[in-house]
Image (tube, rainbow, N blue to C red; front, side, top):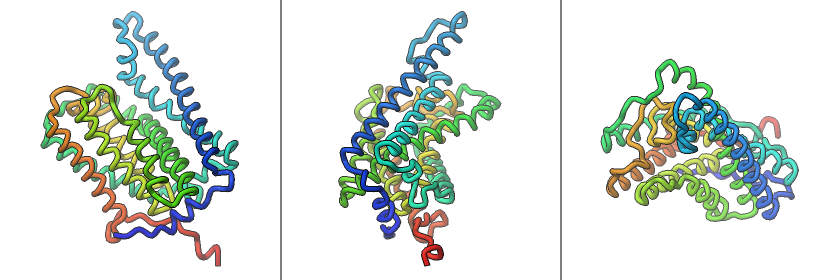
Length: 318
């Protein structure tokens, strides 16, 4: 199973002369600034609405209660709009490019690859959940009713797409493309964005063993997302894969107590007590294996979900 780098080579050489390292760092700072400002704004507004709604109904449960509430989850997802805003400002005013240049060689999302990435991750997520059930069969029905779940399914899916797409355009688009334009070694253009993306999933409430297993699984998933961009020169498959992964956790079966308000089923929370080191090792193995199987589904020549590289249209260049 080999990967033709032609599509990625075209993608990495697409930035203009203003894509220098100082400008890349400046643009990243702008994105972080807008992300932080948007997060503060929506958290303040959401917290105010939450406590106003709680008045007279129940004693205030504090910020932790708000963040774990349905309104808190929605607010957290909305905050990722700040990344999109920051990326638009950075691309327009720092680099003099259109935001669509980050999406791929065609400057638009490859929707067939998006669908393939989504399907592949949903398949491997199902397999992973079966294996995790064998490890820890403690699964309960979530608090949300079926009618409410159906009502919120589309808004949650839309906001999850907002979250996952912003992360992909930042980590697999803006940073990866900018670094690859300046450096040839994947240790420079692929590793830093992947490590940064992975580190954001560290949880202070989890044990060191569980943190290690989660970070190992996220690192493998980041490798998967980077490989599909490398193979296609487009963010479509990465967008679909990331959406499928997060939708599984938000809407189907949650492994995080702080994000289970909309999930139909709740598994034993990873941040909770009772996990042994051997459990963490097995969880990491399942996560890494799931990403490896997804890579095979998307890149193996005989796979029905094989991705297509985004190459120039020869008929238009003849």
